[in-house]
Length: 174
Image (cartoon, rainbow, N blue to C red):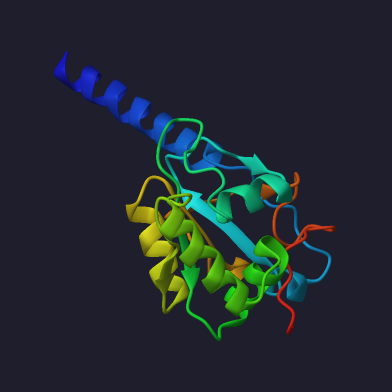
């Protein structure tokens, strides 16, 4: 009886693992040009975050601290690369639609007036952003698509994943 139970438990665990690995997030369509994937900036969230897709407008409200909580009630915490990095310049240009100076003024004002609960966290490396997002259930950040690993979840932007045709967050020099 104990052996049968152990086999059943082993099969169940394998099935659950297969669901977790295979069903945790949609697979990205293969890009036409592998270099396109390297030029894409992936929006990542904690694996426990129920959000799968955001429009660019929704993403902007989150990053500008106009929306401070996720649908599950967790507080949004933004993780950005440090000033001078191409990833940050892309986020400022495409999501915030601000310069670095405008960004600093925006959050200084929002923090002073209480409109923002906190300012975005600044991290030196993509690994730092991934680790922060992994450890903070309400975190959101952006890293190069080629730097994503299984510790975080990539969310769709306007229904598209990095590398797919029409994906909006492309790394370009300003």
